[in-house]
Image (cartoon, rainbow, N blue to C red; front, side, top):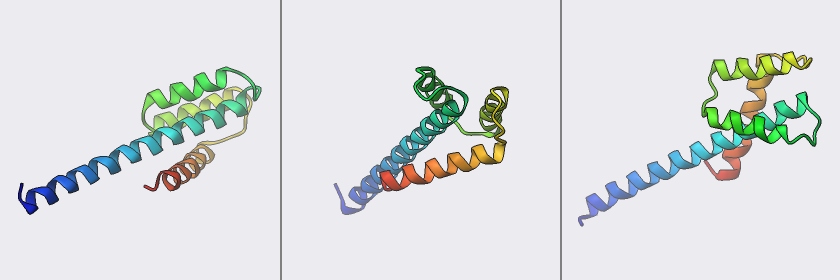
Length: 103
C-alpha cells in the first residue's frame, strides 16, 4: 500500500468516525430533549418519560416539524413553552453532547 493510499484510507476513516460521533451526539441530544420535554409534561418518576424520549430519538431528526411537535405536546399539557425555547434546549443539549464526545 502506498503512502498516498494509506493517507486516503486514514482520511476516510477519520471522516467516518467524525460522522459517527456527530450522529451519536445528535441522538443523545434528542434523548435529552425528549426527557426534558416529558419531565415538563409528566411526573418526574413517570416511565412514560423514557418512552417519549425514545420516540423522539427514533424520529432521527430535529427538523421544524419535530420542534413543532415537541412544542405542541408541551402546550397540550399546559406548559407555556414556545418553539424557540425547544430549539434553545436542543442546541444546549447538542453543545454539551458534542463537548462530551469531543466532536
